[in-house]
Image (cartoon, rainbow, N blue to C red; front, side, top):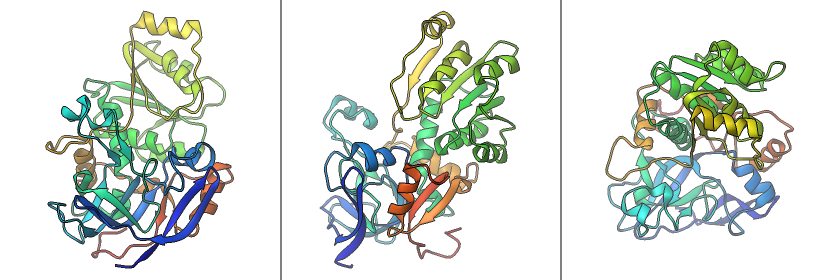
Length: 362
């Protein structure tokens, strides 16, 4: 094991440095993971450039894959060389939510990449209980997107009933919206009406089989939804953008007794006009929130198991979402360009080309 590693250390909002720091040592129940790829989440940009983290310096990054490099004495069921992904929320194990296994609702959680050091580095520590082995046939690149893939699945499961044959309106076609669209196809929805201002994103949706993908200029999306559903509206409306306008469009588009899913990270305060709020009441539509995903220690139908299995069986492929693969040294420049919108991107992965078994990497 080397004594030092490269890492992106956030010292203050806007002060991200590629530095050489000591390689951390795993505790008794931890694993040290050699990072293959770390994805850039929509929450990373404001954390790095605007709001800062819970402490500084801090290494960001919570969407990642890698291989086990070292293990603590109590880290069971893992071996050095295992290809793995990590559920980034570290639950306390003591609160009422943890007692029933709803770890995402933990009252006293820690979090890799925002509260403790994350994976925009050559190595990262993780508790053994948070680690999932990557199935054979799933590349490290694809596995690095397990976390957003699981979140998109969790959002659709929050609807609470099967989506087969239903009409879905999807607002926002960034990475999380694209993954939601893929899951909707897997689930056999009847129809997807998707909206985004970016032509490239719409083209990518069409590549995934979403034929009714529209820009947002001209006729407002809610009117288009109503026109294309004979005034009925969509059974499920998904806000995958997190801007006030998209939530309003969802509320204006939902059918009677339908569901609005708030999936995108909010970018600003939302003020609901009386007609929209009144419509929510009169249609008796449900408004559900989404945060994180369902991770289980003992079951195999949780979001993380299902996401990895969908990649293994090729029912879902996140690889076409990757627009950039960049080294740690080059990442600060690209991240700044993304934040200032001086470049276009879909999914950005940070890391070095890993050396793995033949055929594992694309």
